[in-house]
Length: 291
Image (tube, rainbow, N blue to C red; front, side):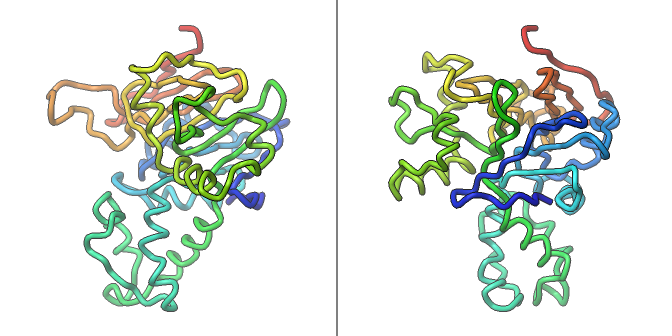
């Protein structure tokens, strides 16, 4: 569980890990077994190492509650993803009504893989179970942005993007100084737009082929993100998108050809990235910076 309370804007800070290693994992989407294979591969030490998540722990994969259980571990830290936000939105009325379930069949949460929650409800959809109530309380306190360490070793974890609404601005992304000031220079509309961008935006990743943006933005420290699945890791304006589609089948319906979908684990200190295929037949080092 994240024990550092977020700032007014939803930013949490962690000191540099002086005892062990830090790893950042892409969108889990219920793929707890795949994560365990990766942690075994890197010999993850729960007494010394930390695991940071870009969010979207839940939905679509086989074990959403298993992934949510990670929030109770002292070595695990996560930002809020759009799927966690949809879950909170789905149960907002139920919480306001003392735990009595209001079941909206066409809610975005259920339409995007959230039907697993019915197993965590009791009394035929009538009341929220204790375990789910506790989980919703934890999710409601999750930050939108994690800042880890300082100086040259500093890095960030966010679910989507630190992009500005107007991408024609120079620069098109916010920087370390904006984060350190808790975005205090933004007016209320800009803050609302940024809060949505942190969970939902895909502007940078969708437009990367049409804009002359560099991989690195000197005013922004390395920023790990997810939300936009692709078989390849993408790097743009200091953003490193490591959502490689953990829940997506090995063979796509369109091509009928094998694709390298799976779960990615990154180590910021070394720029090593490890990958487990969706079919879990192999876990191997996939990429190092500069290769």
